[in-house]
Image (cartoon, rainbow, N blue to C red):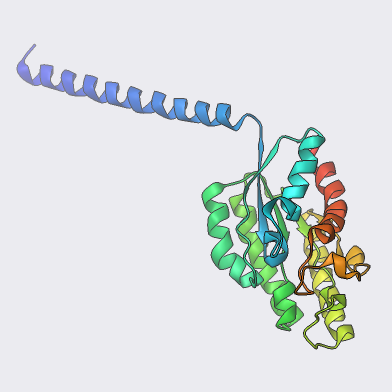
Length: 238
């Protein structure tokens, strides 16, 4: 065997060794990911001030209360991120929250957003267009595009501070937005938790923090009681 053949054999052997090391390293990494996940549902909550729980402690935010109650019922779930920001519109969620979802790649997502769009009196068609884009892009990120729960926008027009808008007009706009949410949920086979009706009963000052607009811990509990059964029924067989 000449030197040229020996060199070729050595190069091929080295390549095979490097490839084998790379391949088994990839397998090992995938295996470790499966072991560390331990079957836990990784949850991200998309939204605005109502989801980040402006004015209340973290444990009293409705996504945190939801996870606490789901765990009590045997659902292995963890809230891995809540990228919601006060004042965010649907467009803001697309531009700033989706990147966090893409980085984490969670198993399950809830969406409660649109209050700021309605406050700015964006046309229903504009809200629908943005919501469709949000859902289209989100469905491509999630391992299962059906693992989304939509939540309707509360009727904040009945809150102590409705910013001087005609309450009937504002409430009607919110209802129009909610019809868009329900329509998109129906078209995509996504479940919808409808908190609009219960929000219309929340007329006590104790339901709100001092600003008269954002909810107190007591107020969020009322929402969570509506959201919980929808999410639990969806996740119980996952």
